[in-house]
Amino acid sequence: MEEKIDVKIKDSVVEILIPAKKIEGKKSKLIPLDIDKDTLMELESIGNTLKEVCIRKKGAGLSACQIGIFKSMFVWKAKDKWELVINPQTFIKKKSVLAHEGCLSYPDKVYFIQRCKQVWVKYYIVQNHKLKMKARQLNGYNAIVFQHEYDHSIGKTLKTEGRLDEERSDLKKKAEKEKKRIEKLKAKKVDVKPKVENTKVHKIQNR
Ligand SMILES: [Zn+2]
Image (cartoon, rainbow, N blue to C red; front, side):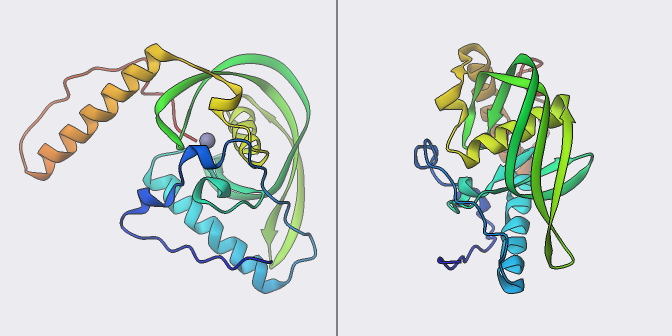
């Protein structure tokens, strides 16, 4: 690999996400399939960082470009198991739906976006210090998360492809504010109950 990657998890892991503007329209590079063992280990280490950030920020997936590494790879939680996906591709897509989505790169926003509930995908995983190809059909939630992360690898984001849902974005902003207020009070050991009961946005997980 041409660039040296040095990403370490800090306590301020939030700061690791780069501004959304820098990922909009920017394609990530495909990872060469003949890479050596050391580079594979480096990819796995990036994968661990992505997973750590994603878990801390309660996301469903996170692409390398979102932390400033423009390599075609992401982590996601498929069937309760985290997986590092390398060089994702999507093929046949079926059953188009209008989805509501959030993205870790646009933390306060909710977007409408057209997705497919059924998609055939191909990608690589690292197994026993080798790249192993996987081809599978995804349905429902998994299909939608995969498409979101795949889009990141080709520079497409919710902002470039979707439409802002202003009502839900407002609610989400309020919910985030409220969450922070409660966390602050809890840190001071004040007994507090949430003010805003939010049913419209609490299920939309960021990616
Ligand atoms: Zn995203």
